[in-house]
Image (cartoon, rainbow, N blue to C red; front, side, top):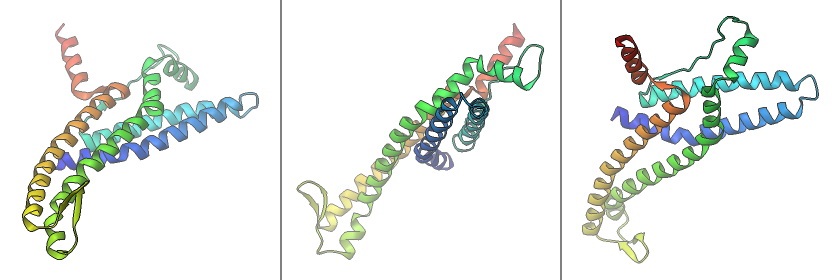
Length: 208
């Protein structure tokens, strides 16, 4: 169940985090680009590049803590010069940076909307069905509509709803865990490499 709750929290957090990433990166880079004719624009753009790195680190940490997927951070270092400008130039030439940037800016929010919607449906519907016996017991005069023209007003039908909700709850756990695993793979692809994949490549290189 620990894995399930980690997946659940991650999927629920995906949409608000996506909104934060999209807003921060869009406003920051747009403002920096618009101010390039002044002395403020270029430093702001450089600052936003480092903000992108920090957001990527945050996303890797969240993925590791909640999904258990440890992602190896991609590094791009210049061959000789280790100055800040050389490191920044090497990072900008690295395709991994742009993949990470695209994930944070473009992909995270729509994936978050999808995951948030699915989790709300798969959690609330089974819980609502399992609550019908309690509602019928304490509010017997109330007809509970669970579908157009379908009402629950007896304990027998309420127990049927409870059984359906219980089965749906187990199915929801499976679906949410599957979604978490899928989102973990997407994050590993966009933000670096999964630690197990990196270790396997190191073993392959050593053996060859």
